[in-house]
Length: 346
Image (cartoon, rainbow, N blue to C red; front, side, top):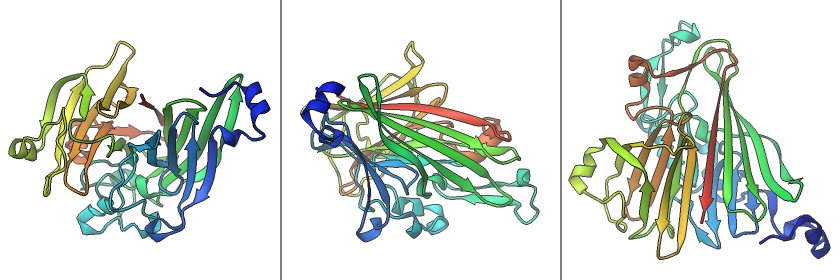
C-alpha cells in the first residue's frame, strides 16, 4: 500500500521512489527511435506507452510477471512499416504488445471500398490493409506526469494521433491513459473526431494481446457469452479449447470467434484471462454501447503463443459488409465518438 501524500513527502525527496511516469527513447534494432512512457504504479503494475506507435501499450507486467504479449516483431518503428505490402498483410510485421489499435476508418481484413464521399475524381476507391493505418502512426505527445487529487495520485499521459490525407479522411484520435499510484488498473479514454468536412467512415477495434506467463496451458477465458455468432473454419478442424487454453503447438492455425456478450447491469462488458497456478487475473471492461461486438483470437502457435481480446464497433465481415447492411458509422464534420476501457490486474 502506498503511503499518503504527506507521509510520502517525509519518506522521500522525490515521488519517483514510489512510482511515476518517465519518458525514454528506445535505442536499438527495429525499435530504435520510439519514444516510450514508462508507467510504474508502485503496486507491481508497470507498463510502457509507445508514443510513436499510436500511444498503444507495449510491455505490461505485474510483480515482475509479464501479461502483455511480446511477438517476434518487437515494437517496430513506424518508419519501417510498409502499409500496402504483402497484399495488405504487412500489419503482421508490426503487431506486438498489450494493445494494438485498429482503425480509424477501417478494421479487420483488407478491402477496397468506394471513396465517393471525398469528391476527388482520381480517387474512386480506397484500398485498406489489415486493421487499418492508425496503429503505425506516431502521436503528438501533449502531456504526461503525476497529478495529486487530494490524497489520490494519478499517473497520466495524453497525446493526439492524426490520420489524414488531402482529398481523403481527416480523423483525429485523442488518447488519455491513466493509472493510480498504488493501483492495479489502467484506464483508457479515446476520443475520435472527424476533423474534416466530408462524411467519413469510422471503424474502431482494440487488439488486446495477452501472452506468457499469464497465458499458459490451463489458463482460462472468462466471459458471459450469450452465443457465438461466427467462428473461423480452423475451429472445426483443430478443435482447440477456447475456454481453457492448451499449450503452444507447432503449425497452429489461428482460431477466431465472434461472441455476443451479455452486458452487466451497469452496461459494461467484462472479459478476463485467469491463470490459477499463478494466482493472476487480467480483466478488461468497456461500455457495451461503445463497443457492441467482441472477437476472441487464439494464436496458439509455438513461438507466437497469444490470446487476443478484441472489442469492436463492427461485426467480423468488415468494411464492405458494414456499408452494405447500413451499420457503417459515418462521422459528420467535427463529430466525435468517445470510448472508455479499463484493464485490471488481480
